[in-house]
Amino acid sequence: MEISIQNLKKVYKNGHQALNDVSLNIQNGMFGLLGPNGAGKTTLMRILVCLMEPSQGKVFVNGMELHKHRKEVRRMIGYLPQDFTMFSKLKTWEMLDYAAALAGLREHAARINAVDEMLTKVGLFDVRERLANKLSGGMKRRLGIAQALIGNPKIIVVDEPTVGLDPEERLRFRNLLADLSRQEVIIVLSTHIVGDISSTCHDMALLNEGNIIFKASPEELIDKAKGHVWEITAMQHELEQIKEQYPVITTIPAENGFEVKVVGHELKGYSGVPVTPNLEDAYVYFMEVIEAKE
Image 1: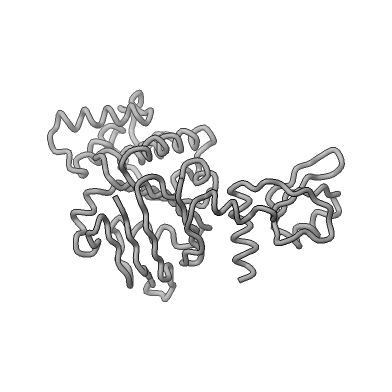
Image 2: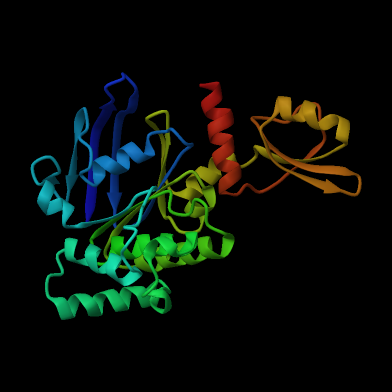
């Protein structure tokens, strides 16, 4: 499977340009689209799942142009939107049964079996008779991914899937996506939560103000931050000055003040120890230091 996005632009009627000349090639496995709120991620996701037309540019899925083959491509896609909602009078299994019918599972007995298997897979079989809109937040997100997966789609698009989830539910969700990514499918994960990318994706892009500003592996983004992350021991009265000079990652109380992790091109005016960056450090360095300079 392959998605080819070529020179995509989207300008809304109010003149806001959500996407500006976006080009990406996405292969099998987990692909992370990372960026702040308002970067254009949801606009791009809605175009990929045929819910929105671009103002300019083309999208190809396995060589099929999206504009010309919408029905064929749509059958290949499972989608979990950020604002996934439930029908108020449908039980959990009925909600998934409805999604299965939309996905093309017409034979009743086979569809019910598929529904039960999927509910078991996402840990919702025991609440299958509960009204879907009465599920907890984490359960609703699990039902959301279940409806995206029920037809065995070749492309799975999930938009901000872990927002509002507690740590246990977030880990469960990441593990589920990681298991799926081992199959011959494309999973596009759009998020502003760095941890969702670092634990699951082998390829990624940064989207900011409608522009792709980085495209490579998470490890390559981390490489860019090596030598630009420090830990400073600071006193209370120094904290505000440090925050004015550097993007601060963490501030942890310590015996002799605070341990402050910062990023920057170089460290001036303070004695700091260089530390090995993680993906969050690299993201902040790229967005707050490299992009700010440009």
